[in-house]
Length: 388
Image (cartoon, rainbow, N blue to C red; front, side, top):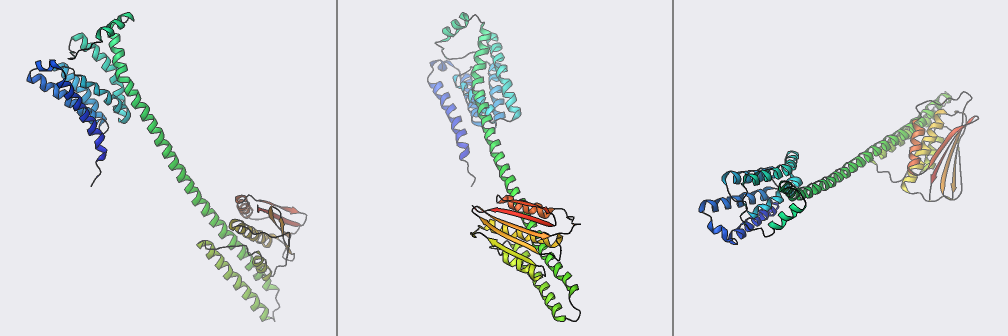
């Protein structure tokens, strides 16, 4: 069953207006002089005012129409204006707080229009408020002392009477809209952050696949090129080389599967990388100094992938008859990995440079850095990974 508790504030407001009308009806002796028609008109005015107040949250436009229609009908029929009609100030507040753009503008125009209408009705003698105002003489005397005419006084009083609750409703409307805008901005920011995380994950996945496939293909290519130097009468060496190519391909396939399934627990098997490169026929000199320390998962992945890309570049661009030197150095606050490989005098790096950019991005994610460049006939790449 639909929750209807949201109607109770509106019903309560309408009932309060009816209670005020009943109180006014029973507490004024002059109402006893009214005939049946005038009494009926009195209750129609009270009911119309109650309806306008009760609908102001759900249908502020209808409330505004009622607020204008009821006084006009009173003026046309000579019906009395009753104290209960002060409840229309709630409508002034509600139209500014909950009204649409058209209703909001119409209610704003209603403030000066009501003030002018009040002056015209007073001049025409159509306004008859049937209850005593003990302070009326005091108000009139104050207007005279201020040196302003009664018309200006009526305009000021009406504008203030209606304008104050209208401005209060407008202030709450602006405040509520500001909160909605902030909430929407927060939702958009969360959505943008989620999109950024997804794109970052996609970039990482693409980079991992690039590193794994690139390294594996480089190793397989090195092994395949080594086949041309084998003796023609040594089928055993050829079989051994083909077995090594198959092993490298299976390792590559396994690595790609692990990357795509994101189930790899740790990838710090640097010795395996070096061993695979040696199996491919490249001479690798590996050294390590300092005291190794445990790395967290992100640091281990970064170290593995960066060295993998370094070795790939060394295979692609280095001299085939030169050794690849891998040096790992542990300092108090970082792990430094340096890869050096001999290059020819006609060395000219090829490719888009995405490998170096990928390494820099990986290292930057953990606060590290990469330096690379040529030193005479040796190309040196040095990666620093913070460990503290």
